[in-house]
Structures are given as C-alpha cells and as structure tokens.
Length: 231
Image (cartoon, rainbow, N blue to C red; front, side, top):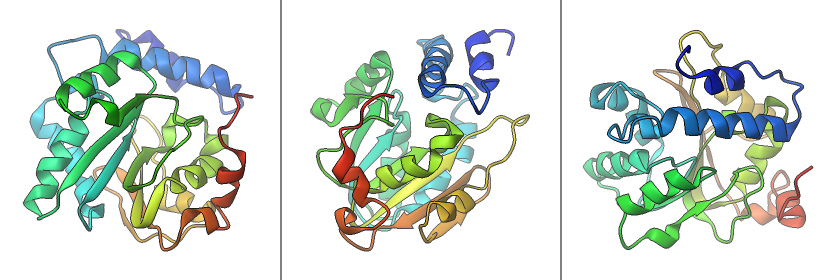
C-alpha cells in the first residue's frame, strides 16, 4: 500500500468516522488507484492483475442472473464489469442492457465511451444519496460504498430500485489482509430473505424482489424520504 496512501487512509478509517469523511476518503482512494494507469482497464475497474484474475473474481455474479433485462451496476467504474457480465450472461442465454453510476466523473466518462449510444444510461452520483427515477431488473451494489453503520438502510434503499421479479445483488470486495464479511448475514439483518449466495472467490448474496418495492415494508421509507439530504 506504500504506492497508494489514499487507499490506505480509507482502509484505516474508523467505524465511527463521520459519513462525509468516509465518502471523501473513498473518493480519493478510488481516484488514486483506478486512474493511475490509463492503459490498464482492469485497474480502472478496481483490479490490476489482468483478465484471468478478473474472470476468477467477477464471473461469480452471473450466478445471480436469472432473466434478461436492465442491469444497473452501482459503482460501475469504467464499465468493464458490465461489459464482461453482458458477455458471460449471453453465454447463458440472457440479454443484459447496461446502466451504471459512479461517484467519480472520469470513470463514468470511460463507461460512457465503452457503451456508445447508451451514454444517457450512466450517471455521476454517490450511491448513498442517489435518487432512482426508474427500476431495474438487476441492481448490483457493494457494502463498502458506505460506512458500516449505514449498511442496513443502504440495502433497503438499493432494493427500492429493483423491479418486481428482479434481483438486488450485493457484494463485498476485500484484500487478503482484510476481514471477510458474510454478505448474506448482512442481508438477513436488513430483514430480507436471501435467495442465493456465493462465498468464494468473493462474498455475494442476492434478494428476489417479489413485490412492488414501494409497498415493501422495508423499502417504503425510501420512497417517502428521497431525495435524501446530506447529513
């Protein structure tokens, strides 16, 4: 981590750090690492070890794909995950339409360049404050986008963006020296039934949206209180 001091500062932030401090450190860490090498699309999406390791650690998300539809990648970076998921899902007979958001404008621009003709499907936003204007068949998100104290309300509001019959796919990335997070257990603590899970190579879990999210008792508050204000 000597070459990435901002990333180390974010990793070391305390659980009691103010929310805006967490987001500031997260953004600095993403900019420092993701944009360090413009020739490496894998690093621009969070990994620097190449195509083989990328597939080993990211193809797992295909397990949660059960139908064709609109796929929103929260924290989309340069769009590489969407691009590869579209190809992997096609092998299973599913057609995914890409959408994404990220808090770093430079990364969103790279994602837009990756998907010409779908530039309007990508937005610059902090996922915690983001206001969804529509629903998606799939919403993929990560716990580390917000402080741990916000994990439960964050998941409930991300669920609100999922269309009936769709899925919220939740993950948690970590380095070998960081603690493992049981994502399925966090999903259950948020009050949702886990529809599926995978614990390796990364921890993910997914939730089936069985009803209109606005009427779901755990997500309805998001419809009443968004757009959310910074506090």
